[in-house]
Length: 240
Image 1: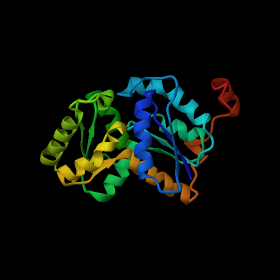
Image 2: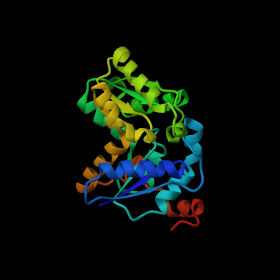
Image 3: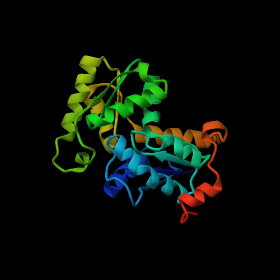
Image 4: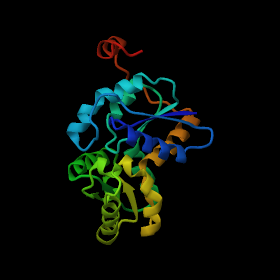
C-alpha cells in the first residue's frame, strides 16, 4: 500500500518531520512518500496562505499518480475538496481525520492550534463536517508554525499550557493538535495531561490504510466530479 503524504507548504524540514510521524503510524507493509510543492508559502497560517498553496498542492497530486491514497498534511485541510475532484483515490485531510477520531473517544474535545488567524478556518471546517457541537473550543497557542522547527523555542510549553486551560476551562475530554508540525508532541502531552491527545497525521494515515484496504474510492458524481481533461491540460500543461 502506498500513501502519498503532502505537506502543502514548501518547508522541506517540516515535510521530513511529517514523513517521520506518518511512517511511525503506518503498518509494516505501507509505503509512505512525503513530499511538498516547489512553489508556495513556507507555512500555512490562515486563509491567504491557504489560497496561495492550492496550485502547488494540486500540481503535486497530479505529478504523483502512483499511490493508493493521499493525505493532505495541513490541519486547515487545505484544498481537500479540489483534491478529491482531481483523483478518485481517497484523499484525507489530517484535520477531518483527527476530528472524527476525537468524536469517537470523547464527548467533547478541544483543538489547540497555532496562531489566532488560523482559528476561523478550523471552526468553519468543524461546522462543515457536522462536528462543531462536539468541539468545546478551538484554542490558539500563539505558536507560529515555523517556531515548532526552532531549537530552544518555548513552543511545547505554550501548547502544553493551552491544553491545561482546555481541560480546566472547556472541560475537554480529549485534545486535537491543530498543526501537522505538532505531530511528535502528542504522546508526551497525553501522558503529561492524562487524556487522549490526537495527532492528525497519525489519524489520517490509519484512516487511509483502512479506506485503501476496503477499496473505497471517491465518488465521481456531483461535487467531486472530475474537471474536463481539456481544462486540466490548460492549467497544468507540464503535468502528466
